[in-house]
Amino acid sequence: MSVVLVTGSAGLIGSESVRFFAHLGFTVVGIDNDMRSYFFGSGASTTWNRDLLKATYGEQYRHYDADIRDQQAIEAIFQEYSSDISLIIHTAAQPSHDWAASDPHIDFTVNANGTLVLLEATRQYCPDAVFIFTSTNKVYGDTPNFLPLEELETRWEVAVDHQYSIGIDESMSIDHSKHSLFGASKVAADVLVQEYGKYFGMKTASFRGGCLTGPAHSGAKLHGFLAYLMKCTLTGEQYTIFGYRGKQVRDNIHSFDLVNAFYHFYQNPRSGEVYNMGGSRHSNCSMLEAIAVCEELSGNKLDYTYTDENRSGDHIWYISDVRKFQSHYPDWQYKYNLQNILEDIYNAQSKRF
Image (cartoon, rainbow, N blue to C red; front, side, top):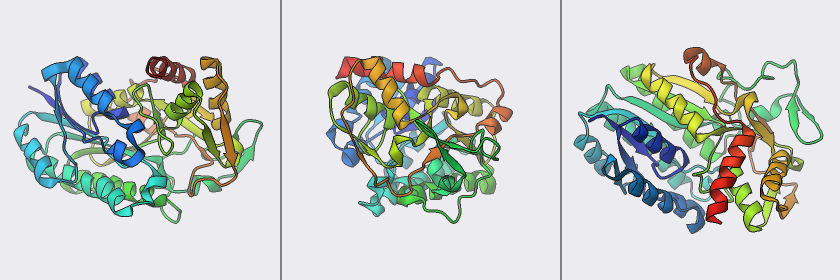
């Protein structure tokens, strides 16, 4: 039996990982205690997805309602499957930089301490396994906001001759910037993942995600940009745009494309790697551009308000340069572009709302 262990297994990237590796014939051990509903309310609960995974995969998916901060509980799971675990995909997190400020202790213990618990359990019980961490572009803080940006009709854009015109690569400094407390806790986890690779020689990688999205996202006001935007467009719930005249740009990567990248790394792993991973120039949009596509797909007009007060430390423009990963894994290719992503989200949500 070959086991893939997935934390946050009922969330967006976690559930995509369950499906992806179950289809390849792996047994998947999932850890998820639905803290998303604690962070963002019952509307963001992932229990529907957990139940769907259980019903779909039966014994091939083994679910544990455990907290990643609980060292004893986590070590017991690792010990049970120690001889069979070949891959750990760590997606569980407190994912909102707004929420983090409301309870810094919980944010840090989930994101940083929880990651340490998992890394050390991996080192003790299955040190040859591959460890993949879903990090974030927020490790770069607000440094991207100081790039030479030009305001266009529907978006902000970086100067065409700039070093980062194709996208931001891993050379950008993570120092001397405002990260948000969420960004700081993810930096701590990101560096731990690198260090376990470089110090202990383990096969680890931090994937610094742009806007991760897809049909299994339980979007909420504080997290899940495209999923929550589509939900509001479909249901009539009012949406709020925070600052930058709605022209802030994000690159968007479908959960399948990200997990497929994980799979390529798993097949030929490295130690202590870091990859920027998002939609790149292949798939990106501004808030205004995303609204237009959501309205076109749904046939509804979005009810939204605008406030000049942007979220503290929020990016005005962020597009990932994924060429480092592509140079290491040239067989990896995108399956979804922005239009495909929003169509996928629309088709899934139109059945739920």
